[in-house]
Length: 157
Image (tube, rainbow, N blue to C red; front, side):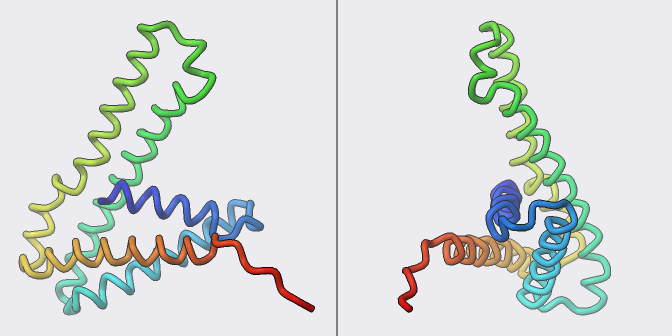
């Protein structure tokens, strides 16, 4: 789920505002989406101030690990993507694919590794709401991406 969120978030950054190709534009867009996500999750979980104080550091660490795992997975994939694969021996290609699979497995395991930590800081109903909120936010981002990437009808003058 977090891997999907990272992928969607990356896609949103790449496609949401193609005219902003500089780093500061991407950083601003990243910060805007993160703020929107935090507000969305906070609202959906109905966190008390005490819960928020202990939840967000745990969540942020999980998110950081998920992003790092996803980055490693994409770097491993880049090692054999497209024409690069043709230049590798069978053994080298096998090694690169295995590195990609290992990185992918790690990226996908972050959520399950952090589940017990979420349960320590939130009641189980709010942990369940967290997963629901993550899915709902992802769906919201997908819908926004689709809405903004659809061709617009020609405007008559």
